[in-house]
Image 1 (cartoon, helix red, strand yellow):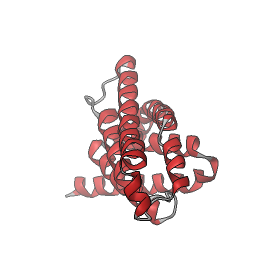
Image 2: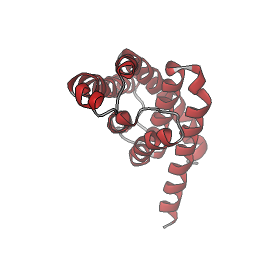
Image 3: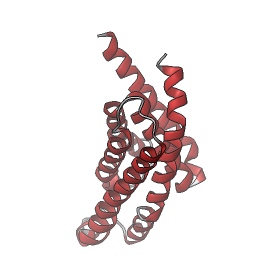
Length: 180
């Protein structure tokens, strides 16, 4: 029981940290906000565990829409999937395993997978494959297609790479402080 309460508390605190960081960094642009978000997602996975990371990865895009941080509801499922894959790949490792080469490989794999999922789902499906449907239904306006196509392209790879590397660097220090 005590362990479940700790897990729930830790997960809730990390979700609050992520949402706060999104709100504070939003005016600084996608590269800063995205890097910070991916750093927190990575820290959650590496410090609190993949389960906590997936909960934060799934809940944070919904809260971001509700708070007006993410304006496009259509992208939420894609972000949830991309974030979850990122967290799972980055957090998948043996406890206390320290190997720079494997850590960097995990960072590259997690970032590339997140980028690929977001690019395929948002740019490929929403902006191109189903664009006519979304335009005719009024769910998407023509200028938004260009914005989404740009936002969910290479910047996603850059922010995921930077965030995963930062999380891999910060997590061991936090783990020592939080899990004594």
